[in-house]
Image (cartoon, rainbow, N blue to C red; front, side, top):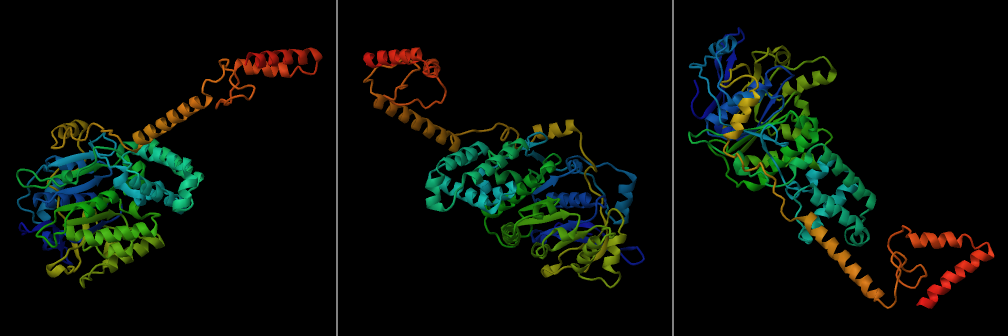
Length: 507
């Protein structure tokens, strides 16, 4: 039916609904990217699951996000259920074998998997600005902050490093404006407030060390299967901007770190981006251009990127054009926008004369999809109405105890659990501030020089020395002011003259 050079997707159907042929994804075109779309409940997660299983069995590592928790079942062996066995017979999957797959669970919050961290420097000013939804002037300040960090050798590892650097920039606003353009304290303050919000939303867990090593999501097992990295994203979805920014950062890191390899017999890594619309919502053009560039060029690094979303209109046209392997589940067409989405999806397929693609999209049953994979020479195959094969692993989520066991036995267990806080911008700027304060205090002491005696807490009431930096009154000052307020009487004036005269004579 299929061989080791392909992944079995399912079986296409003839117009009379009888078996036609096996539909498969050729591994040599796995890095030509892909798209899985469809309305909620139509089977997108199962399609993602069988693709991940296929790549893993072929020795290709996989990274994917688990939005609802259902994908965690890929770590456990499947069970023979009537509807699964029936589907296996319909698509001629013989033998239908059950498997458990090598899974590494990750979690930005460190609760349902190994913690994932990245440093502020690795994230960079563009992605941080996107994450924080900064205005153009604020983004300019962020770029200046990174420039200063580079010039002054300040490591930006976690949020407190960036917060300390921004506080330093606010103090030096006039000096820096002369060098880099307008740096205003209100802009710095706005960024600091946004950082506080991010911190409260849990982003502080993500920024820091040890940072994720790309090699740890590109592991293979001793039996030659690719490890499947599953990111727990149910809590992360409460902050969708952080989710989208993290996955874009990961794609960018892969693009920058991996060498050029050209076309291989199979990908080196496959990356599934679930809820892909979050990446492009309200994104500035420069960011969309960056995504399009990464998707277009990362293919030569041996990485395949598969976007999973409800509506093909969620993906910008330039990015959509790069996605060669397509699985389209059912779409609803009640509103004008939904009808437009159906037409757009239909137009992206190579037509099949046996059926109308736009009509078929609205009539697909759960677990059924229109499939078009790249054939020989990278040409899209004619679209076929396809029954998706059943997965070999468990359908549905695993239990908390099963998850804990897998995490404890993971090949990266213990490597990311403890936060490392080495000397960086925060500590360096703190040290500089303390040194400056000590130097100022010493200069003040030398200036006063001990040339006169003072009353404790009563220094320079007469203006004969250095004024205290504090605005709070000492007990003696309060007493003097109280006395001065009584100068309306001759007795009061006499008392004041007496006190001041005594102090003057004491000098």
